[in-house]
Structure formats: C-alpha cells, structure tokens
Image (cartoon, rainbow, N blue to C red):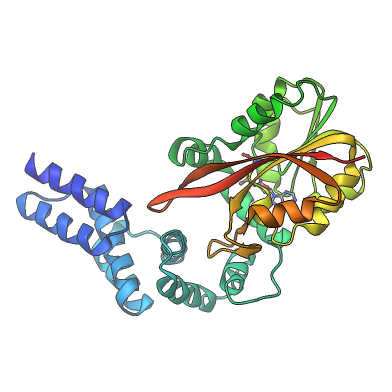
Length: 327
Ligand SMILES: C[S@@+](CC[C@H](N)C(=O)[O-])C[C@H]1O[C@@H](n2cnc3c(N)ncnc32)[C@H](O)[C@@H]1O
C-alpha cells in the first residue's frame, strides 16, 4: 500500500509539473516494489521533462529512451508534449529549447513553424489559417473530452444563458468557429436555423455527427462572413477570438454579416492592456480594447469576467460579451 501511495504522490507531482519531485517519488516507490509499466513510463517522461529544464534536450530524450526501454514512444511526439506543458506552465526557456530542437527535426510542420515564431515575431496579428486547420484536425478526436471533462470548459452554455436575458428567439444563427459543435445544444433554445463555419474538417465532421446544424461550411471566418452580407441575426463565437489578435477586421465583417439590431456574442481570454499574443500561440484582449474596437458598430450590452478553463496551475481569466449591432 505504501508503494501505491508513493506512486500516486509521484503522479500528482507530475501533474503539477514538479518533474524532479515526481522522479524522486517514483524512485522511492520503486524501492518498495517494482513499478507497474504505466508508472515506469510516466517516470521516464518526468525524468525527460526535468532534464529538458536543466540541460540539453538531446540528453533528456536519450534518458527517456533508456528509462522507457522498449515501451518508449516517439521522441518528436514527446518533445511536442513537453513544449505544450512548458508553455502552459510558462517555463519559456525550456519551451524555447524544445521548440528549437523540434525545428531541427526536418521538416517542421505548420504547427511547429507558428509556435516557434509567435513569441518573437511582432508581425503576428492572428493565428494563420493553415496553423488553425492543422492544429484542430489533430486535436478533434480529443477535443470534447479534454475541454469539457478535463478543463471544465463551459463558455457555450454561459454565453447562451447571458444572451437569453436580452432576446429569446433568433431566426438565422451563425456558430462562428463551431468546432465539434458544443454550442449547438445551448443555442437550440433560440430556435431558427443554425449554420456552423470552421477551418478544420475534422472538427466539422464531429459537429455533423452531433447534429443541430442546418449547414456546416469549411472556411475561414473572415472570408465566410464577407460572403454573407446581412445574413444573420446572431453571430456566436465561443473560444474563437483567441485566434485573432487585432479584432478590427473581424468586428467589421461580423457587423456587415449581421442584420440591424443583430447580436454578436463571444468569449475572450483577458489581457491587461490592448491585445497580446500568449506563449500558447493564442491571443488575449483587454476589456477596454474590445469596447474601443466594438464602439463604432456595436453597443456593448454586457461583459462578464469568467474562468474560461483550467490551464497549468490555475484557471484562465476570460470575458464573456454580449454586443448588439447599431443601426
Ligand atoms: C477552441 S475551439 C472552440 C470550438 C467551439 N466554438 C466550442 O466552443 O467548443 C476554436 C475553433 O475555432 C476554429 N477557428 C479558429 N480560427 C478560425 C478562423 N479564422 N476561421 C474559422 N474557424 C476558426 C478552430 O478551427 C476551432 O475549431
């Protein structure tokens, strides 16, 4: 029982990104009895991550190979996971070192290319379409489980609940960046026909399987909106503005796609000031910035600060907005 307890402690330390502590706890548990295969693999991974924080990435990957033995997973995959963990926990030096190693593994894919340049390139004002598409094609299968069950993501239901206090019926609804269709059910209460648009085919396939959409379109948000003037009385965008930095063009095209008095409802990650790109490659926006960009075309009816989802040690601060298009 003591060995099991020790393994549990080691897993917990791993989850909180104390990788050296996790290895020490696994070692202590192993002195009592041999580690089960899964625990031994987690120890190998913890040892590799701890090594990446203190020394060369290659050496850490070698160590992983030795410790994991024949069960070892792919090194590039492990490095990608390390990159995600280090950015989530804001260990940017380690993230950069792993990013540089990944870049040397030819050829870098679009995801790696964007992640490597995003922190240091001031010309990045939105996530590129090919990056978003590749990222979500890759993520689609795990998205619902990870966001809803692991990360406590509830923005679609919260946004729909806010909107309902202003208007209870909409005729033509656009779910912008609809993903796997998590918003379809919360939006059903408003009636009308629901269109979903998204860059990722794999996400759209899941939305189609979930149901609730009259139409699903694979397109970039801006291009799609530009082709549908005055077509919707509600544009709903849950967790999508995080892929846009500068919001001016997006707000302008949303306004043009809405009928007069139509609603634009969305969530953002919160920034202190203006908009900024985060180590995750996503973008955050200050309330004052959103209000300033919205001002010419929208009335901001409500903004509610919220915890968007869990990230690293804490929750991610976000904002939920209800806007109405001016006449
Ligand atoms: C975090 S997911 C949120 C999905 C869904 N709205 C939800 O709340 O579950 C973001 C989605 O926005 C899509 N997306 C991001 N930028 C986009 C763009 N410029 N045009 C169309 N879709 C975009 C992504 O493909 C992804 O499916």
